[in-house]
Image (cartoon, rainbow, N blue to C red; front, side, top):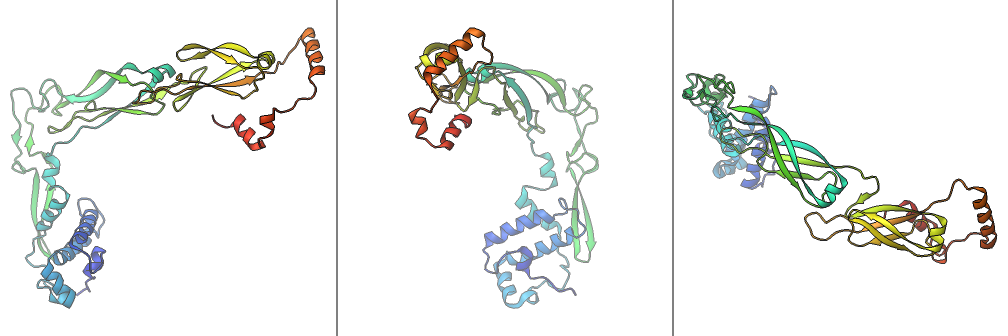
Amino acid sequence: MAIKRDYYEVLGVARDASQEELKRAYRKLAFQYHPDHNKDKDAEEKFKEINEAYEVLSNPEQRATYDRFGTAGIPHFGRGFEGFDFGDLGSIFDAFFGGGVRARRTAPQQGADLHYNLAISFEEAIFGCEKELEVVRTESCSLCHGTGSEPGSQPIRCPNCNGSGEIRRAQRSFFGQFINVTLCNRCHGEGRIISKPCPQCKGTGKERRRRNIVITIPPGVDDGITIRLSGEGNSGSRGGAPGNLYVILSMQEHELFKREGNDILYVLALNFAQAALGDEIQVPTVDGHFLLKIPAGTQSGSLFRIKGKGAPHFRGHSRGDQIVRVHVVTPQSLDKDQKKLFQELAKTLGPASLPKDEAERGFFERFKDVFGKV
């Protein structure tokens, strides 16, 4: 006779493991090696070994005997589990994992979820909007109302399984008799057969339809945000709830603005005269134009903050700001008179130097301001 592995080793637990630890280990291994899930040729033998170990160790009296005498002290050891019905193992497995074959088939099933990619403009993401979506989904058949049978007819009990939805076959092996339970191959576990299928849905109980659904986009959404519409997915089966519709937002780029969280970035181009002398400029924002005062001596890269002109906080009430970054533009072509004026100005200005506050800062700090994120 083959030498039995230690039961604690079979379940992968310590010898002082609690009953709860034994149960968790059994559940994990039984699910892994159950023949319904694992088609390896040695899965059935491992499943029997796991159940044998758990049967002994889950019984406090048998466990105490096993700890003292090993398998020699177990009454049924050495008799090949004669008379033991391995169908009982299915009951143990069902108790742990939510029911037998029939229960899994006849329980209500939620419908599949749907996903929809929706492109919105920059302004729509800032202020919110309403959009109408056209989706194709499965719904209960409008003629048979989901029964799958022709109106006026009823499904009949499956003669193959007598309405149970499963086929039980007793088999004998070296380990004794056990019950093999499989889904009925005629009714596929439903327990009933549609004798007169609905002409509209061909007996499926479902049909595909186009639906227009209105969705409200809240203010402040950003690129990549997903909005869930509960119950707007495919219809369920056997009375199950419909699935959900997940709308994934894609924000289009703007020609003037860039989004950084709840702040909106804008680059303002200035000529030398405006930067040196100062100016008042109408700056565009998502709310319209704003009069921004540019002080004299403004340097390229300077930042100005316009409070409350950014994006609203998603699911909040306050708004971010608009950040205006100055870019002093060097003229690329000058006429004869302009060149003469710049030459005269250059004689009076002398060599360029950094402003005092800039000169006191390190190189990498200045580099970060120019090239880093705001």
